[in-house]
Length: 84
Image (cartoon, rainbow, N blue to C red; front, side):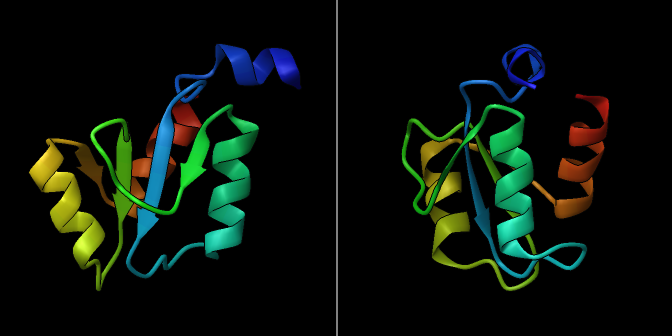
């Protein structure tokens, strides 16, 4: 399992979830990201690599845009996870 995490495209990346997730709970999403080697943060900074934004995303989405952080939908994120 550790080898898979280090080979993941998410290994060493910082991910933030914001808004309402519709396909899984926030805890499930966090567990998936961490299993893939990502660090899940509660706030957005210039060091954040990816923001997963669901409906109702607010200040974290604005922070991501301000810092030039890549923002994807939950569906896009799930597609990225499926690809590894």
